[in-house]
Image (cartoon, rainbow, N blue to C red; front, side, top):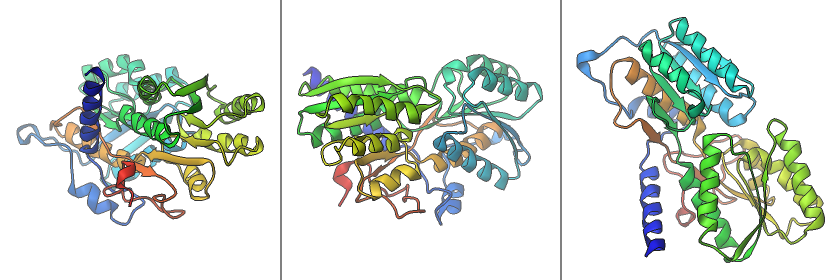
Length: 349
């Protein structure tokens, strides 16, 4: 009964995640019409405010991340199309500097503060100052906490449960797994939780080692760590990585160990270099690709509603990822159809 309850609950969460708002990428041909014709928000006509010339301060924890940069680019493009001005601050991995920049935007009277992927639990002081000044605080991929006016992202517990269970399925319920992650960001912690939830129900899977990757320097560190493991243990069936920046180093280590026909890798996010690996038939075989450009566009819609005096039906807006496999990965240089793409393996024809 206990397991049935968990399964039912996970199913409900997955349904809710799939019901999240989604739209086409700004790189796709139909993006502009999609982003303007749908909205997750409803305006209160009695308190409507002019949003034609908003001044937005966007802070990002680290724009060296391709995912975070993709969110920023889409947000800025969509916001500037509305005539807004957007000033961007790159924290380069320094959370204190990121918070200080947001505080500076508040003191200078910006209309909205947007957080791009910094952990919101570390920005509660910024939220308090923003609210005291009557400034909305909108977050993209920062994890919901009390004080966030809108959080746009994906349900990473659901994503991790899906990809981890698919890994188990491919192994037939038995195998030896290596895991790498960096549990600082909320999204990566949610993925960690999903991994452990699935592992708790699959005693036939032996998690050989869990590695906390060093950031910055994650590419070199992950390569060295995986190489060290594979030098002494050739019986690794799968490698689970917390985000796909680690995919090239994992594939390289596997290939150099002569295990390309034995060991496969699964990860997360949805960056073009990871899709190249999938497309080329490398050991990197699957990931849920998050709709990072549409997230930026959806955040602009939330900003417009909140700054205009409107309300959102929910402070958390989940969007649907696309499952990337060799059968679903788009052609090089193209984006998936974020509206119609497969999320579950069973949706792949």
